Length: 477
Ligand SMILES: [Zn+2]
Image 1 (tube, rainbow, N blue to C red):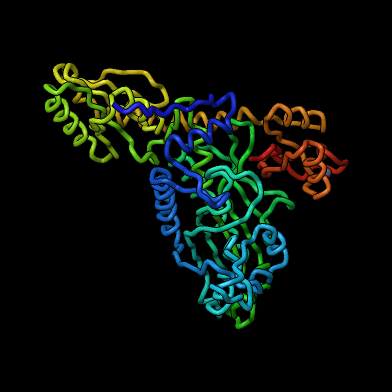
Image 2: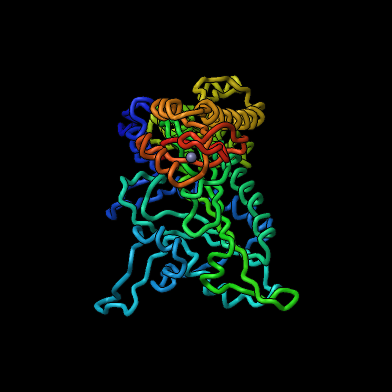
């Protein structure tokens, strides 16, 4: 029997960073690579990304987006065209300067995001109002050479994402896309990752480089830190002017176009893992789990055939789900139980010769860990019910974590206390850069997350001006 049982050595509530790193490796989701800050997506995590990608892609296509693919490299002169944009990304750009022994005449950026390689094409394609809207998405990888400590899925120099880049004739049409996209991302987070987040505008200072405004979905981690999920940017005419994306309107007048961009990244996998996992390992939302039900046979040589036959029958009855019969001879049932827990398989079914005789199985739901005896004819119904209930439980926990972390504050003292307590403040704010800088300095690094739809009341948490909004403030991952 194999003895390489993998146990998470750190408790989640003792040191969540170590717990997370240990879990990533032992559950075989991620691995380090020899390029610092770049990670390996092992098959189980890549499978999960594919699920998110396919589900999002389907929803994108339903609202009329089309996929395309643009080059990985961006000529320097393109990257520099929109001033705020290049300033925002310059410190993190990786450059290609040489091919073989030959130095390139112009260095090429490895895309940190694709606006500046896509929009010269858009400028060529869009001539008249008949060419609009143009709604293109691409699924790709981007590189941002950060120097902060890398964390698998959460912060890596290369990551995977979608980048939507859409163009409209009017501001109204462009802005109408915001709710469509934010609704899609909110659904994906809820349905597939069982994650709760709050959508709202970013402050002037925290918005995307080159955007008129940014709407983000902010979540809260059990480590006491906020984290940004998917986002949407309305770019106004900033890029259209920089890249000459214009068209003749119905009256034959030349107009600049209105643009949006939006993205969901592989970071959502990290948020999901950190939110739901426990001391025994991953706890995976059923829709994303590579294996949804594991059936573990327990037998001696003389009962092997009977037990395995029953396993096959049960698996057949669950054929709409991703079921794995773990009949590997080289591992003990106990090892397999631990493995199923480590890997976060939502439902585990155990069946031995006595169970076959009694026409029953033992079923264990990953988050509860309690054994229940289920009649074989009721297995399918019970599995479906438990899966649904598991989804609700995980989502409710995530929502509770967020809601219980938010504390409304009025002034500096209350703000400081909330940040020290590793919670998230909801503070009255004037949305000006000076006050934003003050918040960051004063709290030792907490930032505004996004603006709540709650009505502002009182003075700004820092200055004498009346608050124009209520903003979430927390230390961020
Ligand atoms: Zn202020």
